[in-house]
Length: 232
Image (cartoon, rainbow, N blue to C red):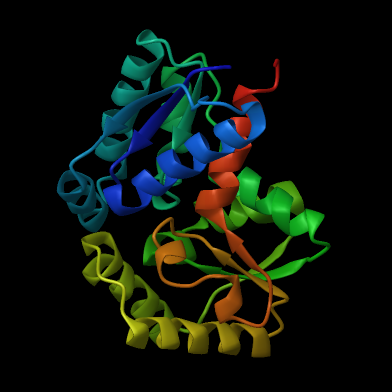
């Protein structure tokens, strides 16, 4: 089993889901008392959030790249960045290490294509929905038609993430609001929806909407386990 280095804490509410999913998957596949071989670097999210808000992506990239380098020196054999938004700086991370970084959009895009879909809605932070790093990766690598909600709906999705989900608040009212956002994306022609923020899976699941939901956290975590056990 390869040792997985996790860049987490962005936020810890979803990072613990990565750990749970990976450990459960390893136990299921190997049996007994097996669990995942993990090294975890968990950030103070307030530091990362401040850099996001200030548009200091270069500084954020340097911070995460240094942490990735430390994980490699500590024995990590592959890296998982436990956040969608911070894949904005994936290039800085990969440049700092010689081990692979498993891109979250690869795990997600592969699942969308495996389901036979081509047009999907993308929910996430405003950064993920509006900046090109994530959508363009899905377009260029998987040929997907990726659509986002209108201005008001994007603002709502972003607000719920930062004001509620990263703080451990899961509200029925916000769940209903997200379901309404999804309904409007479906009316716009989306065949499925990507939960493109690792906290969104804390709020909505596949039973809450009428089209396939692609949970980026789960897909990313399971892809990492696949890679870690590849030689076993």
